[in-house]
Every structure is written in structure tokens, then in C-alpha cells.
Amino acid sequence: MKNLNAVPTKHAKLVAWVNEWASLCKPEGIYWCDGTQAEYDRLCNEMVESKLAIRLNAKKRPNSLLFRSDPSDVARVEARTFIAAANKDAAGPTNNWIDPVELKKTMRGLYDGCMQGRTMYVIPFSMGPVGSNIAKIGIEITDSPYVVANMEIMTRVGTKVLAVLGDNGEFVPCVHSVGKPLAPGESDNGIWPCAPMDKKYIAHFPETREIWSFGSGYGGNALLGKKCLALRIASVQARDEGWMAEHMLILKLTNPKGKVKYVTGAFPSACGKTNLAMLIPTLPGWKVETVGDDIAWMKFDEEGHLRAINPEAGFFGVAPGTSMKSNPNAMVSCSRDTIFTNVALTEDGDVWWEGIGYDAPGKLIDWKGNEYIPGKSEGKAAHPNARFTARAHNCPVIAKEWEDPKGVPVDAFLFGGRRPSTLPLVYQSMSWEHGVFIGSTVGSEVTAAVISDQIGQVRRDPFAMLPFCVYNMGDYFKHWLEIGKKPGAKLPKIFCVNWFRKTADGRFLWPGFGDNSRVLQWVFERCDGEGQANETAIGAMPTETAIDRKGIEDEVSDADMKALLTVDVDGWKKELSMIKEHYAKFGDRLPAALKAELDKLEARLAK
Ligand code: OXD
Ligand code: MN
Image 1 (tube, rainbow, N blue to C red):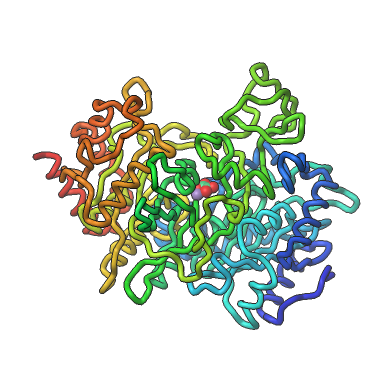
Image 2: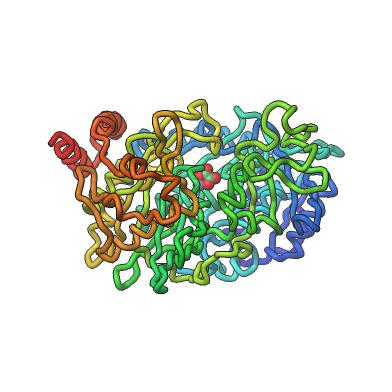
């Protein structure tokens, strides 16, 4: 097989693995990525020349590109995401189990010759600061330069990673192909390559810690460091090694006296994690800075603190709805050096999407490449799951310690989802076990981050890990309970929040965004044993005056506040029966401690 550049490693196992895949996939040549800016620029220029990408107006969006995907390849595909564990029980009731031997046979057939006419890129990447004791190394091979460019924003790539890997270090092997070989002389002709839905496979082998992805070029299906490695494969690594790989943002919260707390939060996809991670507090004197917006890896240090790192180096944010009101810091983060996918293009070479906060400046080209006249054309100009891939370094509020290899000590965990009814604005768990109960029952309305026919319905998404925990979810709950038993552990306090509560006629009761800092203030105070609270049947809830409403009294009336902070006993009784139904799925794998929490809640609500 032709090497397009010198092989930059003496890691015999890695080189043999790359060669073995090259002989199956049959690319034109093999290229080892070095992660330099020059390499990124060259790949971007090649993609612009071959019309796969559009270079945006450099005065408006310096160094930024727009891609349009195939209309069938716009989000993670859960129905085509497989967990190939030795037996079905190991994957549990929440995963698409498939026999690993069968799957490997099927997929080898698909991979045979799948890279013909293309380059095979080898991407050495680190999830987490290079060399951190919490970080892990992966190697992705892919035939998509779009994937390479995105990985170079989302992870740390190249020679520095191979230096840490050495001659025999451990890595997670990740194989990716768009699944569209090219005949001699054929080119993509500017069309996003991918395979039909029934040939797409996003496969995980938890026992051997391998990832095989075929047929999709989009997001979490193709950028294998993110969901596939940092959440799915990491979920089993964390279980076996005694740490936590969670679908959580990490933020640094500073009060007016300069005192700092670190808060992580698990929310299902598209619930505003990126907005919360970058929020600008409306409370005077408070500051939020970002450590991460999607994934937290946490390990105990010697003093018993859980320390969190953000394994990623960029943000793969949902564009629609992002505006100078909802998230100014994300808007600045994607103001340059950004890859946009499936947003609309303006006549002056900038991007636009629904919810950007201003009217389209004129005619657009929509995400499918068609002319779009705002107010006249049908459908949306940007796909609801259109994304920006932006560098964390370009975020104006990135915390100075975001790349600290030791991680940051976590004071509080938040759990939440989009819940129009029942769940109050915020409450605190009564104990670690009760907090695990809350995490295990997280639910949210389904949104466009994933292809699903359930958009709008509430689905249970325990710890926001439903699509990402690749082992039996009952055992994952047990892992959470075990973490709480670690001798000498200084455990984070656990809170449930709900920014999405509505009145019966559909009005949001809480303004959200920067005003969520008012809830963070209460969380901060509770971590210090302060903050006014009522002990209720569901946990400790702020008293009606404990949340600072200065400046929003007109928007949030006393009655609204009362509605946000009372226990809706009837609603909770319905919630209990939904939780029972949800728990029934786990059979005898449901830890007794969680069943006991459910019983205790039922008894408290009956009083
Ligand atoms: C994401 C997701 O893209 O959770 O972060 O779907
Ligand atoms: Mn996510």
C-alpha cells in the first residue's frame, strides 16, 4: 500500500493495524495526520477546490467553511448504532445489541474496497490534554477529509499524541469510512458522500474496545472521538477502572467575592448544555467560565475530590437557536476558524439559521443547496440539527484551567431535561443515593439532535446517557452508587433543574439563559451549607424568596415563582408510575438502593 507521507511511529501494533485495514479498504494511499495548521489549511483548500465546501466571506467569518450534508445524513442515527457485546445481557435493555462475530463478518464485507479512489487518513488523537493521567488516546482511520478537519478542531491531533503513545502505548482503534468508493476517474462532484441508511453501521465492541463506523459522514457517527470513544467506549473503561465518563458540561462559577465552585451538568441532547456552559450571568458580580460543554471525565484525586477534565478541544454546537441573546459566547466562538454544516448561506457569503436573532439579510441558499426566500419558501433554511464546529480557544469565557491535566474539583452535579410540567425549577437531593435516583430518572422531550419519530414526546434518558452507556444500564446505576461509597470521598452535591417549565397555556415560567445564574447562585450557596430551603417530599427546594429575582420581577411574578417551586403532588404521582414503568425495564439488574429510593419517595408523597 502506498504511503503518502513517512510513517511517523515505531509502534509496531499500530502500524500493523493500519496496514491491515488499508489492505481491506484498498485506498489510493495512506496519509498520517500531523495536526499542524498547515495540514488543516491544505485539507480545507482541497475540499473547497473539489466543491465539497464553500469558503465563507473572510471579512465576515475568517477562516471558516460551510458544508452541506446529504439530506439523509444529518444527525446521529440511534437505530443504526449497535453494541456488539458477547451477550445481549451485557448490553442490557437500552442498547441495540448485535452479535459481534456476525457483525464483523457483515462489516468486513462492507469495508472491502470501500476506500477505493480515496485517501486513508490516520488520525492520532488525544481525548483530554495530551499526557494527562485522565486522558486517553485513540487512532481514527477515515476516508473523509471533512472528518479529519473536524477532528483537528474537536480533539488534540498529531505528532504530539504519537510521542505520548510511544512504541507500545494503548490506544482505542476507531475505523471510519463514508462507505462510497470511487470508480477510476470518478469524483464526488461536490456531493457529500455517504451510504444508504440500511448500510450505515455505528458499531461498538465494548469487550475489545473497538469502534467501527460505516456509511455516515456526520457528527457523532463519524467524529469517533466524541460520542463513540469519549462516552460509549469510555463508559466501560470508567466502570472497569473506577472513574466516570459522563455526558456533562463543566462550568466554573465565581461569586462576587471571588470564591469559585465547579459545576457539571448532565442534560439530554439539545437541552442547552452549551448555553449553560457559556452563560453570561444577569446577576451582578457573578461569573461563569467554560471548561467543557458536552463531556466530563472524572477521577478521584488523592484528597478524595472528583476531578473533571473536558476530553474535547472544541464545540460541536447546534446552530439553530444560537443567538447573541441565547449564547453570545458561542456566537463569538464560531465567528472565525469554524466549520459549519447544514446552515444557510447568505448572498454576501455569511451563514444564517433560524433563531440567529436577526432576519435573513436577503435571499439565502438553504441547507439543501436551493434558493430560499425568507417568508416565502417552505421549510427551514437551516436543518434543525445544523452544527458549528468551533475551537474552544476561541471561546471568550474559556476558563484558564480548562486544559489543566489534573482537572478541576467538582462541587456540584446538575441533572435536568426539557420538562414542561411537574418538575420544579430546582431541588437538591437528600443524599448521594437519592441523587443517583434523580439521575436515573432524567427525562426530556425528544428534539432534532437525533433522527427519531418521537419528536415532542418525553423519553427517559438516565443521566442523559441513554444513547451512550454501552453496558447494562442497571450496572451503570450500580457504578454510580459505588462511586458514592469510596472511602474518604468528598462527593459533589446533587441538584435537579428544569428551565423548561410551562403554564397550561404554553408560556415558559422561567426566562432561562443568563437568568439561570440565579439558580446557580442557590446551588453555590447550598454547596457551602447556606441558601434558604424547604425540606419537601422530593428534596430540598428554595424558599419562595431564596432565588434572587431582582430585575426580573415583572417577568416572573410571585405566582410564577410559587408554581416553579411547589411540589405538584398529582403530577408527581403520575411521575411515580412513569418511573416504575421505566425501572421495570431493568428487571433484577435495578439496584435495590434505587428501588428503596422510589419507595421512600412514594411514601413521602402519600403523607
Ligand atoms: C450532541 C448530542 O451532539 O448529545 O452533543 O447529540
Ligand atoms: Mn451531547
